Amino acid sequence: MSDLTKFFPGDVIVSAKHLSKQYRGCLALNDVTLNIKKGQLIGLVGKNGAGKTTLIRLLTGVARPTTGHISVFGSKTQKEMEANLSRVAAMIEQPALYENMTATENLMTACILNGVEDPMKGYISDKFNFVGLPDSYLDKRPVKNYSLGMRQRVGIAMAMIGDPELMILDEPTNGLDPEGIRQIRELLLKLNKEKGVTIIVSSHILSELSKFASSYIFIDKGRFIEEISAVELESKVGKVLIVKTGDNAKAQEILLAANFDSEIVKDSIYIHNIKEPAEVLNVLSKNAITLLGLKEEENSLEDYFVDVVGGK
Amino acid sequence: MKRLLKLYFYRLLHEKAFWIIFGILGLAGIVTGWVVGSAYVRSLDSHSYSLFDTYGLGYYTVMGLSFNFSASSLATIVNGGIPAIVGAYLQLGFWGLIVITLFVGREWKEKTFRNQILAGQSRLSIYLSSLIVCLVIAVANLLVFEALMLVTGSLFGTPFFTANELSHTANLVGKFAISITLLFLIYLMMACAATSWSYIIPNSWGALGLFYASCLALLISVIVVDDFAQSHLLPLYLLENFLPGYQAAKLMVFDYDTAVTSYVDVGGGQYVYYQAVSTAGHAVPFILTTIFSNLFYAAGMTFLGCLSFIKRDLK
Image 1: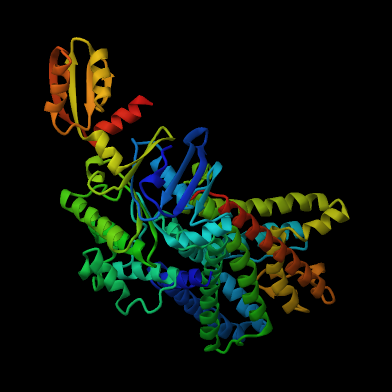
Image 2 (image 1 turned 180 degrees about the vertical axis):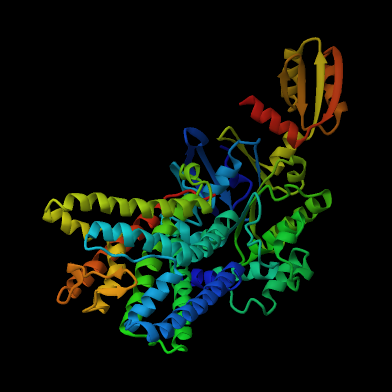
């Protein structure tokens, strides 16, 4: 596991140690250890069935780990963890709303639970305004009649009640149209920047995650794979120059000596984090390396994900 | 827990099913009171029924139950106990259980238990708060029926709130509403949770079926024990007195025994027999046994329910 403190100095607010979860003989999560630091906006990345939702269920106290320990805001016991969960909000798969109630009544239930006093004096309407649903305050329709996008936003407004310090969202853009996805993304960025809320988002849409996440956690088949900052990822998934030479081993040696991040993959050399391809060509030609082929590619989070998961 | 209770009562006020069923039971109470009152007026012309019998017979006629008690405790349970529990709860408690099923089932279906956990509430608080609200629903449903029945009946001149009516109401509330709700909530939580139980009782409605099946099982277990007790096995006979099914059956008889002190033939082919255990001088030990056994079962069921819910993964 990489140490995120070098990228995000600050307090650890969630710490999971050797977490495992078994469901009727199936190991959904296997010895996962990770730390979440205050202020991060983390993308939780994994294939279907990788264990993302299980991890979120454990972090939110909805399910109990088979083995391992979770500490939320420094909790040491189960009782402390239960109490500290009041500083956490979550939306797992779909918002947990009372379908027969209006949006305002749903937010009212969250206010009651979080001990918000006089919520009808602007508190609830503020939340609706923040998520872009100003009209929902007076809407008499039960939320079961709302569109998926509206429900997601009501869910986020509800999660904001009590001003949580950590928000965990499992596939919040599921089923949303591109406009809805953009709105949710902007909303999360706003929450993170303006309110300082630490956010963990799991999503299949990696291109979307890459637009706002400040770091990523990769999991696959229930196992922790890698934790990486967006800065580090950018350097790894930037442009990649793929060259074929007459002597790949010698060429790579020369490139490494010239401080190029390169690796040999099959019959080619992959040179990462390239700003000017001409620099590479100059180095190779100066050393009399015969160039057989050259290709420049834009790498992406998806490519990196496939590489990382496929490589393990 | 205070916030949870506030939330649950807020939800209850917004639960249409609760108000609809509350209304249905209120209406049923008025109709029953009217039938009981009419029977009482007619009885003044034909028989010398005691007021309680008029109330009792009228009431149970409306409930569709027969009360041909025999001297045998086995027969009492078979003839009186099973119809009393299954019959009364099919008609009265069933409605309360529907509200509870909807009320608690909704938390599972819509996964809103998560919101409560994330508000820092412990599983124990969630279970106990659910239990308190379910008990309020069950008791409120029975009380509105009883109150409106008695008020309507009194318009016809039937006595209002005699010791017998109060005793009967207390039995319904104490025995059925409380103990059965405790038991039912365990089934409901198990039925809703994503565990192996969900294969047996796949949803909250399945809990109703399991509940009635276990009521019958409890009574049958009493019959089996009673069969042995007839062979003069005193310890077993004493043990039998503490079984929940036996208690439920006995209390239905207890109504009559404490009220009808010198009365056997109620006419129309109906007979009431004394039960030795509840005759004069035995009432206090009987009541203590009842209270003790019910407290024991209530505590046991609550403990099991809490334990089951606390350890359980939620959906």
